[in-house]
Image 1 (cartoon, rainbow, N blue to C red):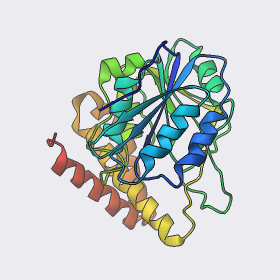
Image 2 (image 1 turned 180 degrees about the vertical axis):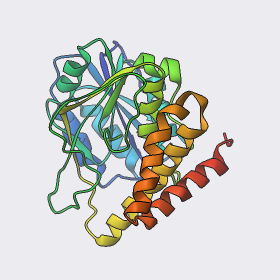
Image 3 (image 1 turned 60 degrees about the horizontal axis):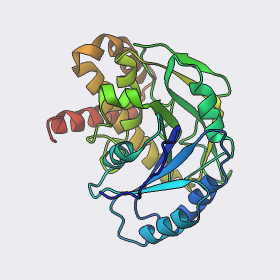
Length: 291
């Protein structure tokens, strides 16, 4: 793992993980360069073992960016490994995350800073909108009102997306990093909600704010694309539910929401979704002791 040197500590570190996206990455990087911020910040780009010319794209951006750029190389495949590497190298008291196919709004960092001006908030998520209206309206969060998330509450999958969330550093200091058995690069894409729920169980309060906005350019347009994404999310939810039920500190919080969900699947004949969630739970159970 390697990083460029940083001279001063920023208030916000924005972590972007990428792998073999050299052709699409420049649009994301251009959006990062258009951000305006009233607080000091840095951009942490984690190259997760790319084999194309992603490294060259990142290097060109880092040499000309208006903000300080930290470049991290993480060879262990999987976005959770990459995010954890980014956390290690980030210097900000607030660590935010977006994806390499997302474009933050110009005032994105100011909205994050405003949310965290409330000292009781330790984590937050924001709005995720389509960049291209011809893409399917999936993997987005258009909610227009704020949501308070008290410590110890159950967090429903989909409320906050990993394409747009942030944490105070002390959350990671207390609960550790992202679960490397979850997230893109594994069959179970629920590392984001798992991290949020662990923060809540540890006693941290959070919030959803519609004022921190990113635009998702996911380029999925066919019925098969939609089917694949929904299956992937269902597998991740199943792992999330089982992990919550299998741990003593979270079992009580998860019991009724999961029971209601299973009942809803049966009542509304959502057997395919139920099967995929069960499949995700079994995959997680099988892999739970792997390093």
